[in-house]
Amino acid sequence: MTTIETIVDLQHAYTELGAAEELLQGIPDWMQELHEEYGARRTEIEAIAAAIELAAAERRGAEAGVADTQERLKHYQEQIGQVRNQREYSALLQEIDLVKQQILGFEEQALQALEQQETEQARLDEERQAFAELESRYQQELEKWEAQKPEVAAGAEKLRGRIEVLEGRLPPPILHQFRLIRERFDGVALAEVRELQRVGKGRQMWHCSGCNYRVLPQSLVEIRNNGSVVLCDSCKRILYYVEDAG
Image 1 (spheres, rainbow, N blue to C red):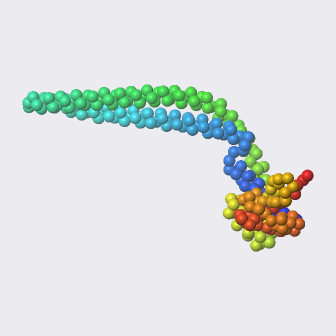
Image 2: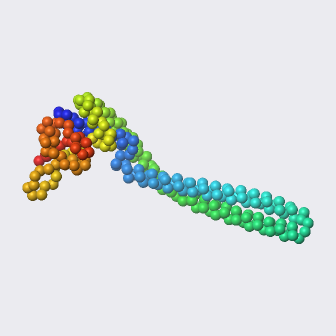
Image 3: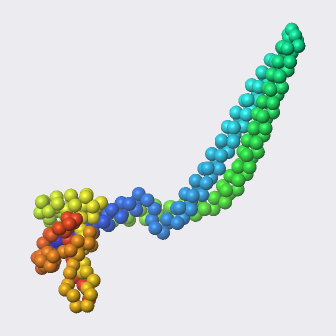
């Protein structure tokens, strides 16, 4: 196996390992649609529950306002017998009327909040009843996925072992270079050399699939015939070539 072939295998192993590790941290494709539906319905239920709590808090605040204002009304009513003239009496009556209006306002707020709370509670009960079947189905699929996880984890561990073997076959400077390029390009150090579309019988030309920069023929010869490690002159990815199966 040439050096470039080893690097290609190493890149593939890293890509497969990344996919396996991402899968172990997430949800498989066959469960994704159900997972999204489950999450959306659960978020909706949580939003309704939050709306109920908000309405309850508003009702409690309004009821507390009623109680406090009634105490103020009681205090003003007790002062009626203590007024000394018509001006004081008129001013006190104005305060009493204002407090009564405030009480009516708080009572209206409390009633509206109670109605909102009851409406949202009915909606929540309905949503939870409909959600029960979905949750049961989701848990069944989740259990199925949990049963499959050990196999995926074992595959990931096998890939780690293969990566260790392949890295051991590479000269340290090249391995170091490979790792730096992978880090720079979000885990992908390689770029395939591809032939440019020719018009008629034009001369063959190749380019880097990573940045579309032209690849010189002698570079392609080094890769194909000698298995050499050649970097793209532009993006500095490691170039590789896949022979046409046809």
